[in-house]
Length: 336
Length: 302
Image 1 (cartoon, rainbow over the protein chains, first blue to last red):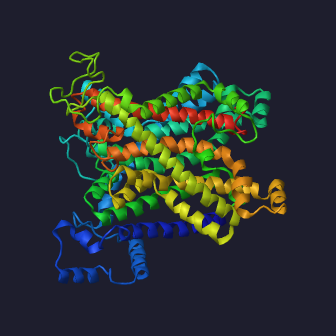
Image 2 (cartoon, rainbow over the protein chains, first blue to last red):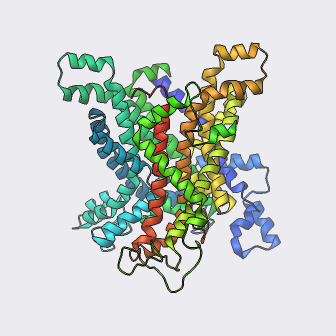
Image 3 (cartoon, rainbow over the protein chains, first blue to last red):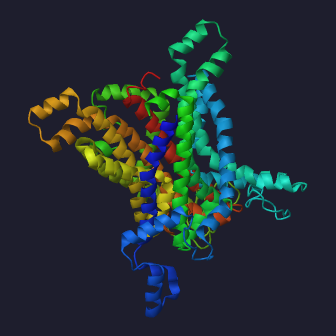
């Protein structure tokens, strides 16, 4: 197991270097001079220009600049936001809990509904029940989620008035930021109604962000189940007289879960991309909204830092998924 | 050769080993796929003949008719069947013209990504060695970023426009083709028919494109249908975020972005463009499922 871990970790290094190189090149391939870009519309005098060029080290050879960037990034120094003048690292981790909370809720929502749907569809394969569930899953998979969010707002916030339109919690409540997760903090604060307010703000964004993962998980679970239900050992288990519940719940499900876990891991990228759209629609103060704001404000250090951090998070989650995979399935561990 | 790969019309494409009839037999077994195909053909026709089908010009503003509701609602009129938007433009005409942009994005992205991706995949799969390692690591890096995020950043670099959105989406799509083609080539390269062709004196270019490629087509066609719908969704998302087609272009995502502030006042300006996106993407995905069932021999039985 240790060898497998080491090997898997080693594979990350070239990808990490590549990702830093991509984030580094991002600012360099922007048309124009980096100092002028940072100065924005105000412009700079030629003397100040030369001074800034030296201060930021843009006059050094590119490979020196890259290694400088790489080692700063490894120390957690991602530069400074041009707009707020705060370190990008701090900005990122102030906003990250909001996105984290939303993503976790979305993936739980997707799993809780997607897994049973996929299993039921596989068991009732070919019936109208299966067909309508899979039809619904395909609609979910084809959904432009930014439109889906607007529809839900029209229905639940506009017409029915059940849920708030935007934000993470009602302005009526104020409590200290302990974990950055609104659900936990509102409970810790002990204020009446704070938790309910946090939940009501979370519901629509969770549904919107979870829709595509839900559809993917349902489809994947169904096909994995179908594959497994055809296997000899499932037939043997049935022939031994085990109850259908036990055959499906224990024998089939455990093996069907292996491809499903990979699928869940792959959803992290989908969630991050979806977060950009979901957070924009619901004015959710997370990194997705921060990134799109930074892009439109031309705050390049923030975009660069955010790009790198998201790629690193995705790499990390994929690593965890691979390790989990190795734990569940010893064949992979030994082959690796 | 490229024509064969990029065409998404399943009647033109065919599984290499089996005839058209056998393909249609499997494809038409999937009723959803047939419905998707019919819908897709209808959208294509509407897009081609948009100038004749649309009752009004897409950017014509009728100053006396702001936010007129659709015909079946109180206050609607037959003059504007699906109502008008905030500056008095006919929704139906804009939606009809919008289909051109979505299909255009899909076609260009698929053509671009397939041409580049398949060529790279064939070469690295055939040549192997250091080139293979280098290119595949590069593809891994592109795939390490969420696609929409990478597209956003590329558009931020290139400047927001529909053309740049198409370029960005094509760039993030092509690693999938490189991987698929490479994997298929690695599987085929050592087979007897390739060795036979090589012994018969077939040159490397012909060997790659004429001998090996036709036998790797099935997964590529399925992937093409998938990236066609993803491209439409991503382009609409970029338009919605203000990073794709710019107003007053009647692109569906851009129309949604413009309509956002009327969300609680005029449901039709928000609902209809999104519905158009959903229906188009759904039709293509239905077709994609049918293509997979018909072309992928491994899944044929299920």
